[in-house]
Amino acid sequence: MINRFSLISSLALQMNGMEIPGLGYPEVLIKLKEEEKQKKSYKLVLDFRDGALSIIETNRLCEEVHREFRDLSEAEVDYLGTEINDHAYDENLDIHCEKCNKFYRPFCRLHPLFKIPDREPRKEELSTKVYSQLTLPILFRIEESKIPNAGLGVIASVFIPIGMVFGPYKGIKVYKKDEFKKDGYAWLIKNGDKKFYIDGSDPKRSNWLRYINSPRHEDEQNMIAFQTNSRIYYRVIKPIRIDQELLVWYGSSYGGEFVESEDGGKSKKPVKNPFICTPRNGP
Ligand SMILES: C[S@@+](CC[C@H](N)C(=O)[O-])C[C@H]1O[C@@H](n2cnc3c(N)ncnc32)[C@H](O)[C@@H]1O
Image (cartoon, rainbow, N blue to C red; front, side, top):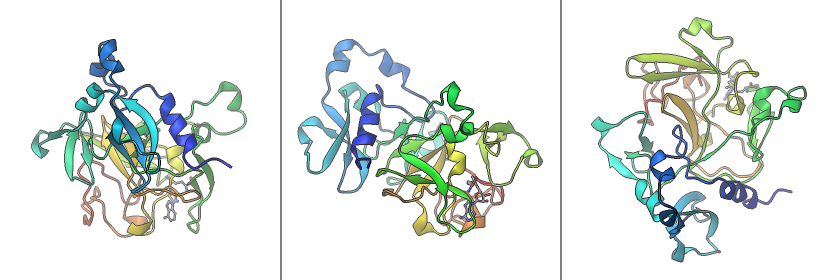
């Protein structure tokens, strides 16, 4: 039996940088002097009280409420959380915080994000399973969805806190809907005047995110999709408990319309990042 928290925190501890979705580990932090990097006065933790990632000062660490993920230097924490005016928002640099309803560069310090990378498939495994399934991180399993007739889905094997980020969604770049191999696997990406789709319908050329289904109603939703750097990522907005299915909203065809869609679908729950999905062809 996998321990609820130790697996995910040991994964996080192995990563040597605060990863920024779409941007990797920022240059500015790589160039920091060694002595700056040594000043570890903050920690990225899982806060059990709200099931979310949080950044705290080291002297506030309390074993009963926190599970330590990794140390953070002052410089790293200073780098986070610069508030950006809506009109100055840059798709390549800034991420919208759902809780604060503001843009931050690179993301909110109070509600931090942490990216879990795809698993790297080994060559000899490719004959055993299709590529996209082999990219599944150890935290999850792919099996028949609990949603009737939805096919396969992704289920959590450990507790997944708010703030975890997965992605980017992989697939083939296409410019027209009629080029989709199959409906239901393509995200629309918009960057200025540029517009294209990432079609993950081919399981050999996509990753595990292609197996994530859409909730039937708002209560079931535990992730949102967002765009940064012309890529689509999924982020956890509600704690996902062991054996629960990961569900990201991708259009109006499997529930109410609460995300702005390409055809101007009504927005009950606006997502500020320019994440737009095609109602019939989402994600
Ligand atoms: C991105 S894929 C998700 C993985 C898919 N279940 C599979 O087995 O490959 C999207 C497709 O899953 C199915 N699906 C996703 N959410 C659903 C839902 N809430 N109800 C019914 N089918 C759903 C639809 O067939 C949709 O086209």
